[in-house]
Length: 135
Image (cartoon, rainbow, N blue to C red; front, side, top):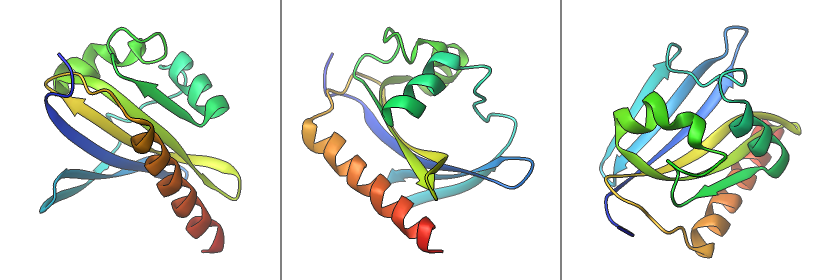
């Protein structure tokens, strides 16, 4: 299975003392959902490999996310509940402090992320971080 399924993208930003996530789900070109999360928030203590990697590398590319050593912590229940097979994440900074992640997920099948996908997400992360720095 490759390059099948449906792509999901979301942007998670943490803010305030309670660190609630604000998630923008981009489900299709015309359908976007903005939701505030708290209970489903991913915590560093719960996902040490994932968070250590993204904080040091700034991004994660996992075509086979369910068996990838960095993203395996997300399989139960997140990947199974949302039928996610592939993941591409890039970190967002505010004043050089990590505050969020742009997440691209593929549900229903594997997606082989191209270099263009990684480059585009890196550019988006840089633009968002730059804009937050100026705010």
